[in-house]
Amino acid sequence: MHLWRSHTLALVASFALMLAGCASTPDQAAPGSTDTTATADSGKDAGERDGGQSVPGEDAGDLADLAEDLAKEGEDEGDIAPVDGALLGADISWPQCPPGMGIPEKRTLGMPMPVPEAQFVIVGLTNGPGFTPNPCLTDQVDWVSDHQLMLAAYAVSSYPDADTLAEYGDQGPFDAASDLGRLRNVGYQQARYNIGNMGSAGLQTPIVWIDVEPVPDFAWSSDKTANAAVIEGAARGYVDAGYEIGVYSTPHLWDEVVGDLRLEVPEWRAAGETSREEALSRCGDDWSIQGGEAVFGQWVEQRRDHNVTCPGIAADLGRWFHQT
Image (cartoon, helix red, strand yellow):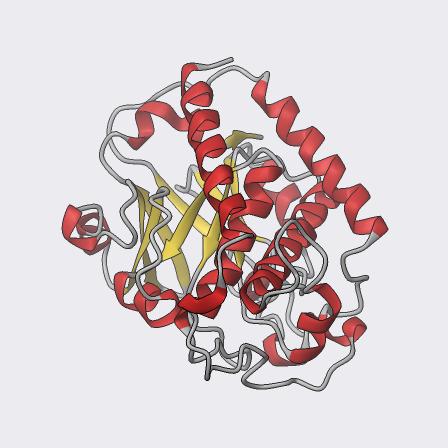
């Protein structure tokens, strides 16, 4: 076992215990007047919500088990050789799929794939909100493998509509008798669904990045404590499956969605449509999102999402990537 994995597993164990404690936490922390059901019900049945793919259940659980096996296999791999200086990479997801795929609210766009100089790719697992698969995930994983690039994964989390809350609120490790416990269970099942899709696509990664930001057409609630419960549940879902976790956001967007939630996990920091230099500046302490170390800065340029490693990160690449 590598030294970084020993450190990670210790952090993961502590984090899992913290989240387990959340399951029995009284709900008085949540404003009693806040409705923790969906703020905007899409009116879709389960099959329509996920783009026609089956929702979590026995089959998804089998795929999640497969993904967990892949994660364990990754523990036996050698370290990726460290490099000096920063590495350039990219992130891709449903917008890069061929045009016209996906759910009605998030039709794919055929946007350009990473530039030839990219050395790593972080692939998105969802088609926007939770329980919607990236419609060309397998093809994108194959593309990264064909180019022999380093690979990781990210997933958008979102607030459940009333039907989703009813369906998954009592499925998971948290107290289903409480509103926050049910929301945590939904987040947990979002993670399990994504893990299952990773297994189906053969995607190996040591870490899953949890994307926390407003999701157009799938609004978060006005209750930040309720929103944070979904993220807590998703975090535990990935941790229970053996993955390290990090968060993708900005300080402003994080506060807008989940308030003062502090997981103190690694951070992938967005800078928007700007420059590599500005993205690198996001590695500074003044851009901390929730108390974790800075790993990547991201910027948008010429219709692509570019990423650059923060100082020191390239010395331990096996912590952040699977080498395809």
